[in-house]
Length: 354
Image: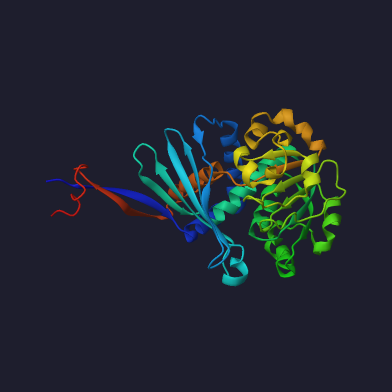
């Protein structure tokens, strides 16, 4: 008698992710994620790791939003696809995060769905980890004064991740929403760093007074930049993470043109990131190149640098596999028999035939 062959899929819900973080500690997880991302970039081979351009839908009803999918595959091993929804009005109108995501991981030998994860927190963590990797290479040595423009969810993990690679002395923040800005100090209180909130008109004062600047805004298409150009420290490093769609811009063009501009994924950044606003010959080394040849680029710590962070699907694969491993180690999560095949693979009705 023929038997059905069941194939199980690991499922990690938002509660499972929170349990893992609670058990391991967010500092420990961030440190491990930064190390793993650095290692993945150090060994990155574009002939082995494929990350096609993300695609999706942009719409204005029932709410302004974006739904896109971000694929990455390590040849001969696994593939991951993150589906992410971006709805900037979610926090104020729905009480939901502006970014909500899920990641699916597949076995490339069979096409089996190995895991399905809530990736909302994972997206914030991996974005912070990428900025930490770039900051560690490009920011000036020693304790840092950090500025943050845009105080939403991403701003928390940006500051936290940077604090794992550099001492942070003080923090200055700005947001167009005074309620969000006022709540930032509470949300990062666990870091125990002096935090000053300035009003939107204080953008040039903030710019002049920091060593590292993180722009984490939800700027609309055609509404940027989000700060005015002005005096800044010669060694200023900027992590620009808000421009992730054609027409979005956080930084003023004169600043971009005099900076060493370092994209996460060049082909994507030229379409969606800060890199879309400059000539191709103005774009500097990408993140993988910075990591592979770190000693060659550390002299950039004395000049203006910008990490153009549009979000790379490789980062999603790295963070998903980290949490899958931690979940397996701790016995967290569940498995479902989502995909089943009969022992006769040529008969699509074998599963329903008595």
